[in-house]
Length: 267
Image (cartoon, rainbow, N blue to C red; front, side, top):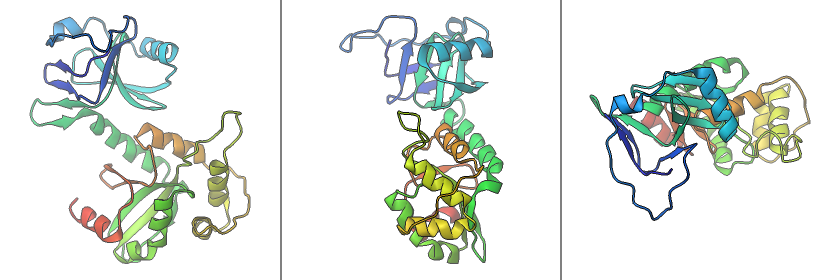
């Protein structure tokens, strides 16, 4: 059952979000759904059982739930899945796609709070498997999901000296936009190219050559390209470049050197 807005106490699903029942029949698009305020007592009908909830979401929607967290809203859980972040009722009968805000003290994006923590944890996990372009006079460090075929990634990389001069160190994570495997189950060219860069004897030079359309030798080794890609999907990456700041905030898209420097100064 689709609704544009669900309000529970001081919890809001934005108009861009979708709230639907997994068990109930769909309501016609033109039907009128009355505005109602659901009380906490009415909503919190069951206790949270993480294993049961994970199994139900997997069976009904095919989503693999990696982690479940309680939210400040009675009866509503946050789901961290292999395809992003969602919400559901504790019993798994209702599934919510969209942003959620608390209005208790200030307007707070509940999903972003969880995503910020996840990004910082992921950055720490992969810190030894990044390709780093370190600024000589380092003032800031950004972590960037990148792909060889991405035009703006190439543009950003060609300006690396300018970023570094401004004291900005770049750390690359791999995000093959074509995914890891194709429909036939074979590794995509994007994945194989990024793996070859990461496995190269000098990955910094290999990355520069690749982004300048120069040939790179085929390499195979044990680097967590797939893990980095999965991490990106979990924390909201849907395109490259995507920049994670030291605070855990993510800035999507290309940022010119001067603009990125100014942004970092405001943190």
